[in-house]
Length: 170
Image (tube, rainbow, N blue to C red; front, top):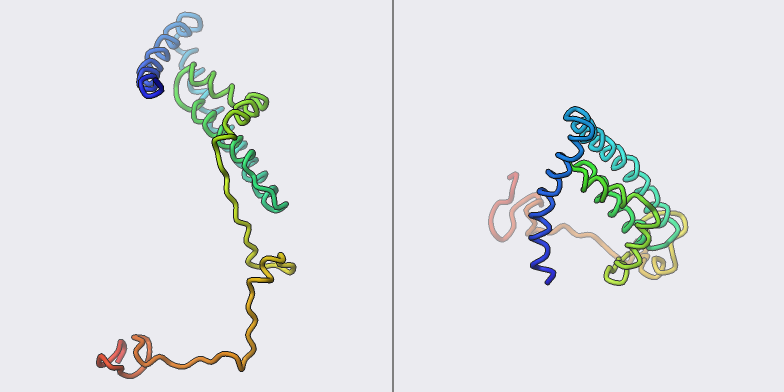
């Protein structure tokens, strides 16, 4: 059922958008309709930029606090989809895009989707003054007398010739 419904929606959406253009065009005229389409595209672009940066800041803040930013990423993805729907010309897609910018609707959608989405996170600290306990367990400290470096004669970067003849640069 789902697979047969999607192509029908994909076909019906442009037809519904054209009907929307005709109806709005009768109310506000051709130039008013074009102005609304351009305005919704500009608003979508602006919202994508502003809200996208806000979501990135929130993801960074959640990550710094050691939380998995699953809900923030979900809300951000819905806002990106909403902004793209605003950029696409058409009044039906504009309405759907604006609906995705309403916080309680995003929360409602997230509650329905969160059961099916798995967000994995691996927090590794590569630098800093206070490594986590798990990082301390992974670090192996060697003293100078516990290792040594020897030149590899068969390396193409060594000077001289190895078993296969002259090396690069000679």
